[in-house]
Amino acid sequence: MKFDTIVKNIQLVRPNISTVKDSNIGIKGGKIITVQPDLNSSDANIIIDGCNYMAFPGLVDAHMHTGIYTHLSNDAITESRAAAMGGVTSSINYMRTGQYYLNKTGPYREFFPEVLDISDGKFHVDYAYHLAPMMGSHIDEIDYIIDKFGVTSFKIFMFYGSHGLHGKSDDQSNFLMIGPDDKYDMAHFEFIMRGIRKAMDNHSDKKDIISLSLHCETAEIMTAYTKLVEEEGKLAGLRAYSASRPPHSEGLAIFIASYLANETDCININLLHLTSRKAIDAAMMMQATFPHINFRREVTIGHLLLDVDCPNGNYAKVNPPIRSREDVEALWESLKNGHIDWVVSDHACCSKEMKVNSNDPDNIFLAKSGFGGTEYLLSGLFSEGTKRGVSPNKIAELVCWNPAQRFGLKSKGDLAPGFDADIVLVDPNETFVVNSGESQSTQGYSPFDGYELTGKVKTTFLRGNKIYENGNILDKACGKYLKRPY
Ligand SMILES: [Zn+2]
Image (cartoon, rainbow, N blue to C red; front, side, top):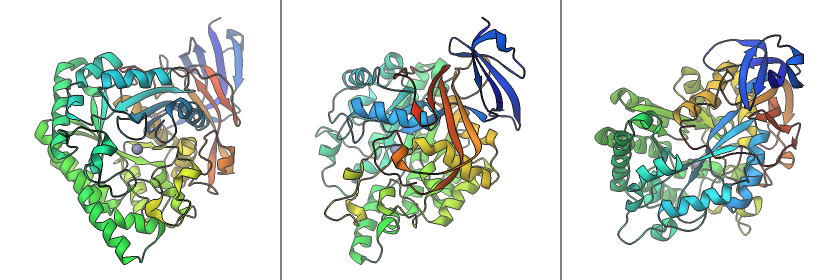
């Protein structure tokens, strides 16, 4: 047979063009062989009727945290099922040593094989990892990490210097599990950038896919404003949390990160989850000041859909915080202007029991940070994006092509010959109300609960295998580790 499978009767959505066309996709050996109208049904054993749905490339969710609040061995299974449900076929996860995650420290040459071991056979979608150098000795491992593990992207959490994951903290060394001689501070960030620059020089063939991601918030501003907001006691919930980590704390961190990137010639910089007009303005000012730096700007689906008045309140606590409606609309405006490169879920499954403090559930400062949402990434972006004039092709750039290119997934992110047959079928006309009870995730709630979205994921294919359809996970966990470049 010419093909294993033909997917017929679809509206093909490709990135980097401006039209959606009737088409068929011919698949063999997990790869797309051809994309054209009117393939002959006798050329394949399996014929799939696409019901005239839109076919997007499988999503690359470039910012997930699998295994942060629940052990990786369980989280990898359930949360990758949620990913499949959302049309995500490549999950890239931020991982680090220290508290949460595996709750241990040590060199990555020992730590990361354990991560890969636990991950093996658990993911329902393909997966990769970003790693964060938490101590000086990790910087010396960057070349090894690239060569041995195919991990080419690294992370800095700028606010960890004197602020914990959920609020102020006096005990960063315990939280980060770093030694007495290590400091997680700006000098450390500079040396990480120097290490990455060196790695780019040592790997000229991989230079373009070696990058550094930064969570940009300023610890000192956050600590001071948290004290102010708590002492004043006038604000509550998401409004209080946003005021305690104000937008200028993001802007300042973006300036510092960009200055250091220029100083160290660390030219591939990803500014993660920008949430506010001030953050975007700062990022664009830095782009203009340092045009030779290849900045990428990220937003999350949470920050595009939720605002401080959203009905699910403290369940929407996340870092950086959910902002005002005005900031949300500023993010959409930037997305439409081409100032945003990709949209992610920042999925961090934090169970209902763990999320809010049972003794004081209304206290936002005692709630844990982060929530899952990978299962609503495409529907959320499609629903709110199309209302604002964002085309399906542009959506395919934001959640497929752009992150795949940046992070070295060369066979992901498009529907064209030679690419992996990762395909998601979406009914662009089906409207549904988010009900976390239907999710594959174990989280037990969603900050999007009750939101009405249009554009439902019907079927997800991973390398030619149907892994999800109409609420059901169909296959065993057949996701594979993506050693980059892939
Ligand atoms: Zn994150």
